[in-house]
Amino acid sequence: FDNIGGLKERSPVTMAGVRIGRVEAIDFDNQTFEAVVTLNINTRYDKLPKDSSASIFTAGLLGEQYVALEAGGDMENLQANDEFIITQSALVLEELVGQFLFKAAEGAGE
Image (cartoon, rainbow, N blue to C red):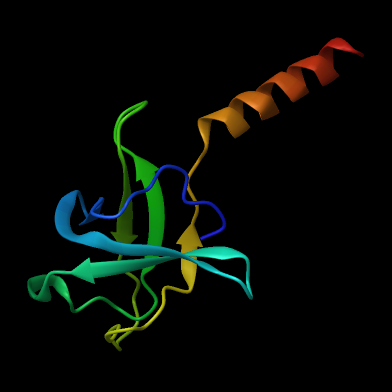
């Protein structure tokens, strides 16, 4: 992920709103300069298509952050230690406010 926001180890991993696992570890890749999030998925739910995606969301306006998975359509399943190719980083409230203020100031200058 480019930005994990306030995601923490042990945060929930969900699919279709159902908790299917937890964040096991969070690390930093010195080569890609990205956050590496390791997920522990319950074996009952480990038949995820290989092209599934992972996004970081916030429960409510200021609630805890969690990883939400969305199933792809690939006939092959993800295996242990595979990586999600499609990810969506956390929306950071401060960045959104900053963008809004920048656009508002830009519009006021016209």
